[in-house]
View (cartoon, rainbow, N blue to C red):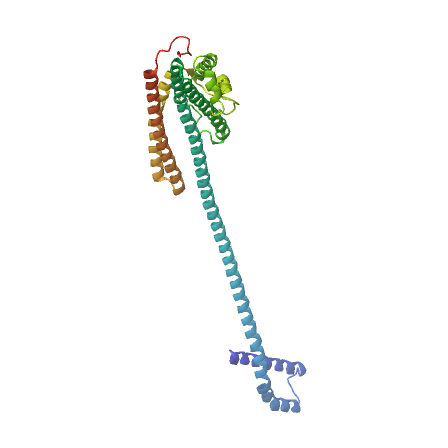
Length: 369
């Protein structure tokens, strides 16, 4: 590179010198002293000056070429960096879109799981209320059987046993009242929780079309209480006064006598409040027991089908939804066992009522339904 550059610049200098002489001596005739000077000094000048000039020029050209190459490399690197940044930006956008997709999927799974749990809670709320409804005729039947015993003890003139049976009856009626109110409370809670989950939320149904009319049982108890208070034989009133301070009080009543007298009004109000919102018909105790037993039998089959469907769903669902489905299946199976027990209790209580009813002398209580 350097020899070639030096030769080129030597030729250029020669031409420049020739041009200068031609310009000074246009006729081509140089004075002898000029010619001698040129002939003597030109080779030395060329030998001494030309390499330095050639080196500087070569260095300048080389530096220029290097700078151009470096600038080109910088531009290439900058372009590559720009491409890398653009690629990184595109990858970041892809990663962000994937992250959002996965987040949306996770949110959807959590939402579905939360909705499934809420629906299961509502279903459990309805199931619990239906179990409470199934207990009502059984509870009332127990109160009736206690009154049967009270009537018999009254006829046999045994005051202590009479008041014990009366207390048992009023406690059963108090349980009937609290159970009825718990059903109404469940209905109110369902009314507030279910609307956002419609149409998937189960409707609030009692599961039966007939409920026992407790008013007759309460009236029967009140009549027996008043007859016992008026009876002089056997010290019924005295024994009552001795027991009233130790007897278990019914919530909402200040004394046992107040419960005997006014519990029927509260039962009627509770059933009336429930009847304003739900579709059922009041009937006698035996009809209510039969209807309850038949309804419990039908609900058992439905619950077992629910359990089977839930277990099939759990086999194909994700882990969280499978856990919810399995819990629903387990609850349905447990509820089916409860329905089976309620059916057995209702049929057993119906049999007890039919077998234990005995004719009572006229004027003692009310032995009709």
